[in-house]
Length: 233
Image 1: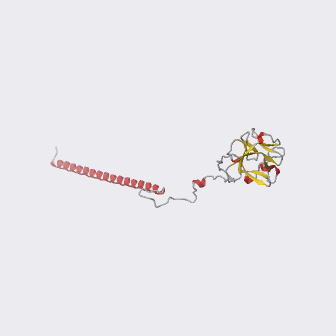
Image 2 (image 1 turned 45 degrees about the vertical axis):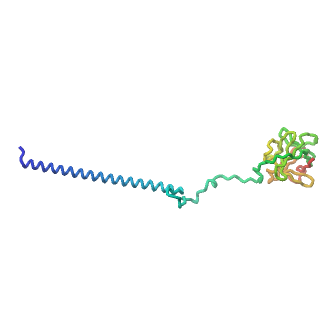
Image 3 (image 1 turned 90 degrees about the vertical axis):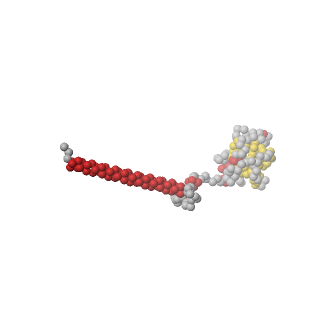
């Protein structure tokens, strides 16, 4: 049987258990509030860090979100611009390179008679050579100005091909009137005319015909040679 003392002790123990439970609940709620505050602070700090990073990246690019930037982007003396880093093209020695031949006018029809006793002829097989036959129709030429004083192209009337000097100094005939290698600079020495290749003027390559009728390589020509002197007939 229970006595009054037992009932009192049981009630006191129950009260103590309830107080313990209340203390545990209060401690848990305070712990949760502390954790929520710490998480809120950490999230706020993260947001501030992200904002700072974004502003730094914008300022590094030279642009600010609030207004015009007053700070310049970081530069290094070892960096070069793209234009400086690119390989630059070697300058050409030809002052007329890239100048279009836009002046299409009718030239003088004539024959070029070389001091080597040969007439200059332009043939359909792409060859340019001399012949002693004055009646050869391939020796009928047209001297067409290109728009610059003394600059001409030489066209064969029968073949409609133009005299050209290639990069090896050889004379050929081809159909492109605007080819840079087809232009010659006409000059005069005494009673004779000479024709200096405009593209290779800095090398001193002239149009020339040998006594055998073959063309003279431009690399071996000089202004005082008979092979480069012509009369207009």
